[in-house]
Length: 214
Ligand code: TYD
Image 1 (tube, rainbow, N blue to C red):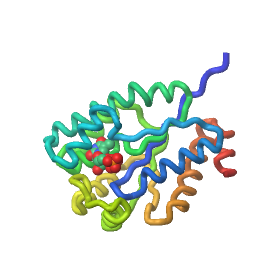
Image 2: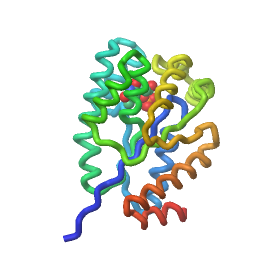
Image 3: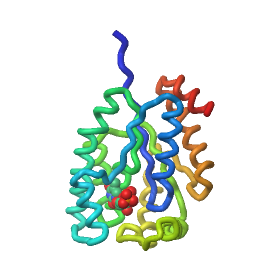
Image 4: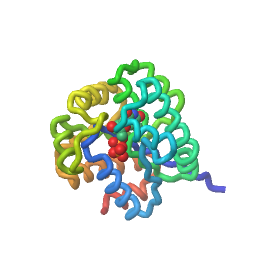
C-alpha cells in the first residue's frame, strides 16, 4: 500500500491592508491550475467564535483576555474540523491569518508575546510555510479606507497597526517576508516561486514544476 502524503500547510500573514486575501485567492487559483485541490480558509473563521470576534471589532465589547480566549476557541475548532482533516488527507491548506496574528495583535494589545507564542506552538500545528506580507502601516491604512470605501475599524488604527507590524517583524522564526508595496501580480509571483521551492523540498516536485511553469 502506498503511503499517503501528508499535506502542506501554508499561511499568509500581515497587518490589515497588505492584500492577504487577494494573495490567498491568487495562490489558490495557481494551485488549482497546477492540479491541486487546496483547502482555502481564514481566521477569524465564519464559525460562531469568528462571528463573535467580528462583532466585537465594531462594538468593542470584549476585554483583551476574552478576546484572546475567543481567538483560541475559534482556532481550536478550525484546526479540528477543517485543517487537520485536510492535512491528513494530503491536501495543501492555505490560510488567511493563523496564530502569528494572535501573537502580533494580542501581543501588541498587552498580552505577553513570548507566552502567547509558546501557547500557540504548544496547542496548534506548525505551518510548513508562512508568508509575511510587509507594508508601511500608513500605506496599509490608506489602502483600507480607499479600496474598501470604509473607515478603519477598531483593529485597524494607524498606531495600532504600527505596533502589530513591529511584533510581526520581531518574530525570529522562519517567516518568508514579502514586500507587499508592489503590484499584486509581482507579489504573487514571488509567493509562487517560494512555495515551489518548499514543495520540491517536501517531495512534491510534480506540483512544484507545474506551478513554476504557469
Ligand atoms: P481580518 O482578517 O481583517 O478579517 P476581515 O477582513 O474578514 O474582517 O481579521 C479581523 C481582525 O482580527 C484583524 O484586524 C486582525 C484580528 N486578529 C487578531 O487580533 N488576532 C488573531 O488571532 C486573528 C486571526 C485576527
